[in-house]
Amino acid sequence: MGEVLTLNEARELRVRLRSEQRRCVFTNGHFDLLHVGHLDYLEQARKLGDALIVGVNGDRATQHLKGTGRPIVPAAERARLLAALSVVDAVVIFDEDTAIALIRALEPDIYVKGGDYHTKPLPERSTVETLGGRVILIDLLPDHSTSALIARIKALP
Image (cartoon, rainbow, N blue to C red; front, side):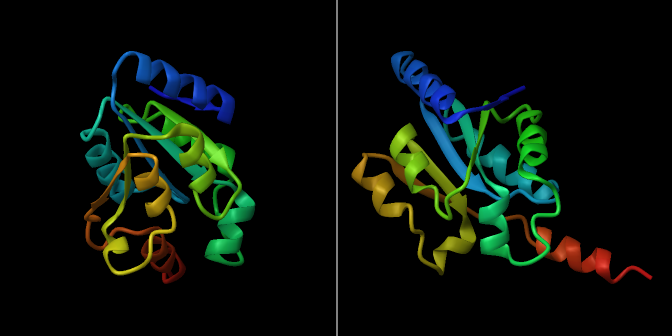
């Protein structure tokens, strides 16, 4: 089981992983209404390295990026749920719209995002590559998204 860490604690974890020559995988997202699509994605990401650190968009960033009414679940609760998953080593909440500052701080060996980024720009790509990391896009589990889940809930009688 992982932990919810401050940025400084996450940096210390990264230093320790590097000194132990363990490969660090990093991903980030909103993870609002945790579902099996998220779990599948995180399981695939974890298999790519020795430790998985997850950045969770804070409430302000989630509202800005996802719109009014989001997040449904506050960031502290989303982080705690993610940290409880066996495939997650650590979770960090961040308030920026992109994970660029976190990537600069943690310098992950591998940065993972969903396959939907095959067709749209990934703002963090150049930062990861400049720092010597690799970007890997993972195909998402079809028909599993928070937006689809919200739509199904709204459609209930």
